[in-house]
Length: 300
View 1: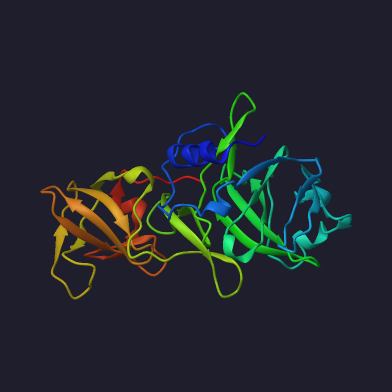
View 2 (view 1 turned 180 degrees about the vertical axis):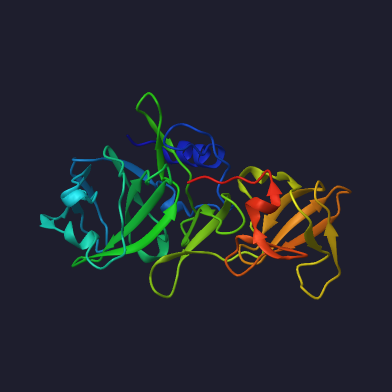
């Protein structure tokens, strides 16, 4: 199923749907796609031979990808990847760090992350162990297949009627993939985030000073015990004690040691986290966040 470039761009900017059709916030904003990359991503059917110039040598490559779950020895794996008749299935996994759990058995995608390099990418979508959607990217240089890493979200999302629409990811054609990131501190939450290829050739999140939850969601919380509140994200700043029963609204985090909140008066304040990011400063020491604040979200 392929759509016109204009339709893809409109849908990709206005809709982000998970595999089960749940609407999600748009990925982090990126520059307008370059004209040469505007036709991508393209949705492709599993178990169907596709012709495309993967490595920019001016010659069409024949790609055959069977994304059905082979599940050898209890480990979910893609059944087959063949390019120009050569079997590269093993190279998807051998020492690459690529992991599949619940691959989309019906579709994969062709993408053009960076229009200037002449390369296209094979993108494999996976629904994860508990709806933790992820897309893995691979490049073919004419001799071998290289894993570029994975980003959270799906390039395309299948609807209840079997049709597919552009999903969580956006592509600017200049090396950036807009997606989202599961934050690693305080609770279970997600933030819009751009990914770029790092010096190791793998996709990595572009660091942000602060990460704001998808849809700019906020979390009203109530203190279950006394906790320490800081005026700035600096341990040397003025601090005070919020008594048990007091309220805050969680706004954002640096995804390391600090959480930005609004107090009951609407003023900014900060919570400081311990080294593991899961404990909050209190007058009696660092305490697990779920024991300090009521209203946080914890899910796996």
